[in-house]
Image 1 (cartoon, rainbow, N blue to C red):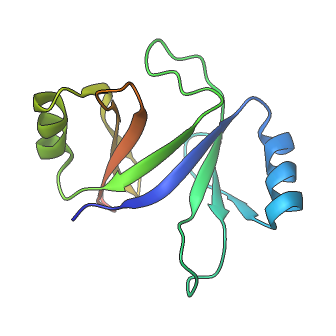
Image 2: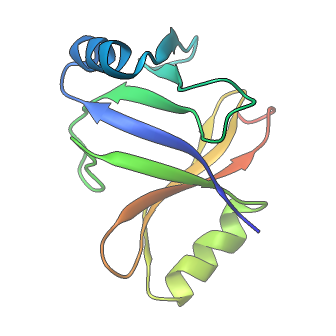
Image 3: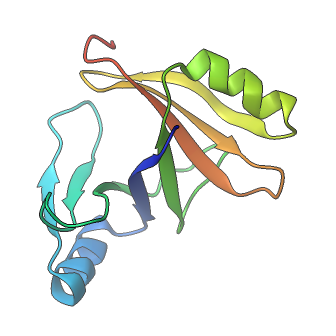
Length: 127
């Protein structure tokens, strides 16, 4: 069964947001060595329940603007299959399948109520 495995915080000022979450919750941030500004967020030890996430700067997007939101990402075995299921059940794929180098493939979707979420297919060979 697909599960939420990651969250993403979109921030106007990433440094300010990181300081806030570090001070309030003690979360750790590590910069990703990829093609865009992105930080991995460690929210606790692996032995604790919960998930880790990421933080990205706000970007002007033509569609699927997630500024000031948190997006939960669900692990799926096939982006293509689940994109079809989402559309069939009345949801939308607002940002289609895109490669995240060394991680996998991601699509941003909306449910029938307009709530955005991501689906990710792990594939370390993604380019």
